[in-house]
Length: 227
Image (cartoon, rainbow, N blue to C red; front, side):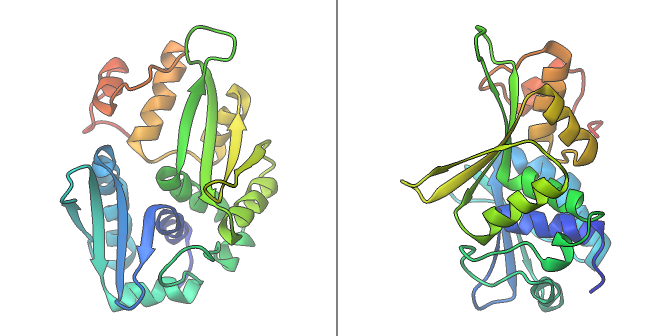
């Protein structure tokens, strides 16, 4: 399979919230209820564009999440050929062909952020949440270390810290200048994240527990004209 920006983004998505089945030729990608729009508007079209197949979108039985399911041997083997692994992602790595291509790294990072990252805002010394932070939380392992290398290649300033209680580690890119740089170089395709950024840019703050629908209304958009 020829690697291109769309495939690199899908690799990031799968390594973020996806799972390559241990024995079957099945890919599952799971997210929150609000991720439904991201799946419909971004992820499914990416699969259709590259493979001419559309994953099925379903609501989980517990009704607190949506998931995409694609069972296709050709597609599955294509991602295996790039270096993605079956089963547990504890030893997952960024494909070498992406690690060494500066043109593909931003697309991969966007897919990984849209699924495994978050945009947070802290109060610092003020009374409201205004200070932006892009955060990744991953299991300690090869994928986490690979991510640090990619951030270095794009000259991002970040801090790193670990939580050994849960065997997890964090990268955090903080401050207006750094977050604006992320938007310029990487971008965000998930409406959940992008509306937080647009709301912050318009009002200079973030309101905790504001829903996607509330943020869209506040910035004068709806999900159908959101781009």
